[in-house]
Length: 256
Image: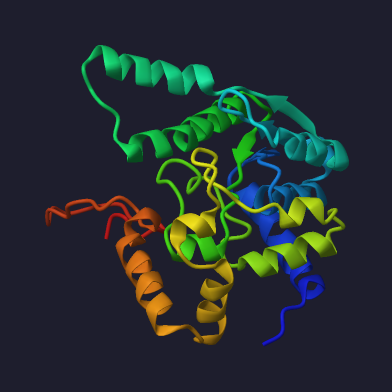
């Protein structure tokens, strides 16, 4: 099935408006990296809510060599924005761990900045006029669990969660974003490696597998393993059902 970004946009924008209303929100708060996902979500938010109701948050961890992309994006969209350096937060936690004699694992050092950025986004959102944090993950990343729980996997709702990386680029082009914001290779911001370097396969391979079922057997094994072991990131926290009666119910499955 051929992807047509122009046909997708009306339904997507209407859904975003419905979600914002359901959250009781007004102001979309978006972490801006200058890459395709945050750029497209910001552009979608401008189209859905108007630029006066969109806030971009740039969050370098110390010095960010490619922050010009982020500055260029908020300038292009004409949205209000903050530059919030998270180094004091991440550094403070690591310093306190050292004081306690705790040696941070590699997972700690990789995931801490992502979680600090989400803490920052929620602090800003709750200080704005009915601010709501929008998730910026895409289907390709989520399928293999390339995200951080309580970090970039978080948000009130996910406009791009069912779009592959290539479809995100097409949406961005249809929204009129300059190409430079759509082709910047995503990286972990720590090691200097791209997502695909870390994963050991391309997002294109994931996209072909997800949409067409076509994949190299060796890559299939890697994708399937990562998908299987990362599903906990996308589920509600399990709760023990003790068999005691519930007089009230709600529209979720949490209490069933």
